Each structure stands twice: as structure tokens, then as C-alpha cells.
Amino acid sequence: MVANRVRFEQNQPEIVRLASRLSKLGFTVTDSVAVQHYLQPGFHGLHNDLDLVVHGTASDLPALNKKLKGILPPFEQVKKFTSKRHEVYNTHTESGLRVDLELTDIPFSTVQANLEHSVPGVSERLMVKLPDLNFLVARLMRSVSLPTVGWTRRLDYLTYLSSIASGEKRKRLFTKAKVEGYLRKMCGGEAEKKASLARFGQVLGMVDLEEMSRRTHKFSQETLNEANLPEGFDELRKTFISGSLAKNPLIHLSHAIYSLPQENRRMLGVQLQVGQSDQALMSAVLHSIPAAQKSSFLESLNLNPRKALERLIKKRKTAMPLPAIAASNPRVFIISDTHFDHQNIIDYCHRPFRSLGEMNAAMVANWNRVVGKQDEVYLVGDLALGKDPKRISKWLARLNGKVTIIRGDHDKPESGVRLLEKMKIRHAGINFMLVHEPENAPKKWNGWVIHGHHHNNDLVNFPLVHHVNRTVNVGAELLDYTPISLDELAAKVKAPA
Image (cartoon, rainbow, N blue to C red; front, top):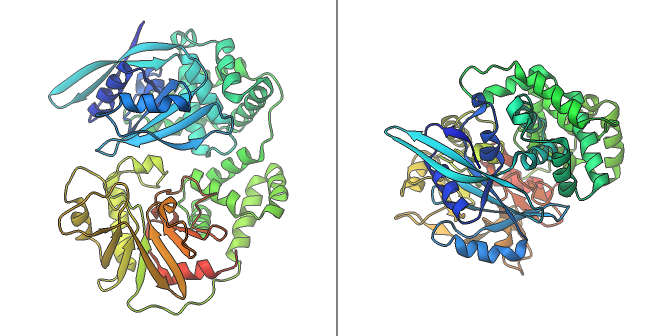
């Protein structure tokens, strides 16, 4: 069937053309691009990545990568869900567009849809393959109910769901039985499906509809009639919630973090050395709680989540100071993964910037505020993205200090710019190996590894300082987008775990 058309405004030809080309090769376009197809026109917005799904297993990946030869670099695995029913891989186009691929053993129906993009002087409509609405609704509901999802993201997903559920035509395209059938398979069984629906009901019971309505401005600059959102919200509640609601402490934590006053939010981000996004703060809070105290902390979240969080902030504020380290001269700083000129990184890593220009300007100002012209800086990969062949030189000219670059996966050779694969340094009596991806450190290295690459996407395995693995993640997100001095970093390494 040919379903309703989705119109993409402004500079979206790469996504639409790539989606159409990959659909012809058997890939199904999913998530934000697919969901938008079913939304009210007011929710149609721009996209900065492309998500694909294929019914298959890991053994199918070599054949899929072979199909993509000459179109995309091979997909590489990034994570595996605990249900083991889904495996996720990603790759990037030359322009930096991220493409995610999910292999799932859950069969799903598909529809054909026309996507259109418009740029000055050009309008193009192309056919793509999308999952049916029941599959997408189940995915969104599961995402809302996952305990470790940040509250802002929950609101976005609920806004999508409420928009879908508010229209008579759209409501006829999905049914409770089919959605719950997909959800049962995604969760791994009936008991897990019921637990997911109970958590979904918990979130619905905590949502402020005015709060959710304010999120609609994220999707569109035009005035949007929000009258149907409460109708769709009530429809979700009536259709899917019948039993008792969950009392999951992590869902309470995600809401408490979202509700923090801005000053407390900023203070918590500084204390935990992460950005101020919901997801980054939530992951860092959970990682910061000692194992022996985690159970009582989770219990306190169910009683009074905001009070539990404020107690944590107060406790960390009075924590033991770092050991003193004699200042180096000239001063030496370090950072990785600034990703200047990379629009998509704002969403990928939940960076607290409203636009690419704001991000670039803030990071230049932060850098030059702490780094002097005679200071030394180690940039551990991925300074900038974009099509400019001189992009490294362009940004180095705007940044203070004598910069040594360890090559990241987005750093391209450039005349007059030296890119090192790895580098050994010694500072404050500590041996450090600098390498972009920690997995590429020499196997027999017995010192510390300073790395980037993982950003704030896995703070359990790659926090700022991991005393057991002896790794230091200097991704920009963990340093408040400001180079950190090696003196301060050495103090953190020498501090008690």
C-alpha cells in the first residue's frame, strides 16, 4: 500500500535519498523518520540521523554489509540489549550522518511511503519502506517504560504517542492486541510485557500535560494546535492501562533530575563531571552510588525522590578534597571529541546547546578561557567534522595553545597537520597512554589509558576515571566542554576510588 506522504523541509536530501536507496536493498526505515509519517503535520520536523531495522540475526550482518559496499562503510556493533532479541550497529556517512541498524528476531509488517525533501530549486519525492504502526507504537511504549531513560526523552516519546492516538484515522491503523503482541515479543514474554505496561502507567501517572505540551515546540517552529494531545493521552491510558501501576525508583529518579532547579542541576553536573542532560546526569548518579548504599538509595527514591537527590548533592559537595599536585609549567591540558561543526552530536550526546553555532562558540570560549597561548593541549581525537578539507587547521587557528592531536575516527589527513595514532606521556609520576579508542591501547601497557570515543554513552564502563580499569575518559561531555589540566586530572587519578 502507499501510505500518506511525509514532507521534509530544508536540507534533508541526504537522509531521504539514502532511505530510499537502502529500502530497495531490503532495509526498513524506522524510529523518528518512520514515526513522523504517522504524526500530525505540525510534528513534522528535521532529522539528523537515519534508523534502520531488519528482521534477522548477527549472522546476517556480513551479507548486509556486502550489499552496502560503495554506499556506506560497514556497520559495527555498538550494544546488545539484555533481552538478546535485538542487536544494534552503526556507521557514518562521509558527511557525518549517523546510520543505526537494528537486527531483530521479531517479524514485523511493512508499508510503502513517499518521503519528500525540498531545498531551494529542488523538490524530490522518493519511496521508502516503513514498519507498520503497531510495531512503532510498541517500540515507543517500551522506550517510555525503560527505567534508565531520561525524563525529557520520555516526554518526547509520549508526545509522539499522544499525537498518534488522537486521530481517528491513525487510531484505526493500530489495535491494542497487535501492539501488545509486538510488546510481548520485544520484552521477552507475558510477565515482562505486563511489567513494562505497569511502568508505562507509572510514567503516565506522573506526567504533567502542560509540561508535555511545551515539548511540542521541539518538533516544529510553526504554531501547533495542541488541543488533541490530552485526547490522545487519555486514549493511551484507556487502551493500555488496566492493572496496578509500577513504583520503579529509577523512573522516580529520572523525573527528579528533570525537576531539579537549574542551579542544583548545574552543581550536580560539575560534581559528577558530566553535562547537564537528563540522560548524562542519571547515568552518572547511578554510577556514583557505592554498591553497599545503592539499595537504600533506591528505596529513598520511592519515598521522596527529590529529597534523596538533594541529599546526594549536599553529600558530594562536602566530599574529601582532591590531593594536591604541584602545578606544571607550561600548563598542560587535555580533552577529546569536541566535534566542532557536527550538528548531530547535540542530539546524539544530549549536549545542552540549542544550535550548532551556540555549541561552537561556547566550546571556543571555554577553551580560550582556560588555555593560554603558550600552554600545551592534547586533543585525543575528533576535533571537528564536516566536508571542509582544512577543517582541522581552521579550528586550530581559533584555539589557544600548542595542540598535539591523537587521531580519532573522524580526523582526516591534512597538509601541515600531524596526527598521531597514540602517545605515551608521564605526568605527576603517572604513566599515561593517549589513544582515541581505549580498545586500541597496547595489551601489555601497565599504566593508565586516557581516551575519548565513548563520549557520555556508557558511563558505567567509561566514566571520567575508572580506577579498576585504569582508564580516563576525557570526552568533552564529561569535562563541561572545557579542556582539563593534567594536574587536575592526575589528582583525580590519585584520589581514593
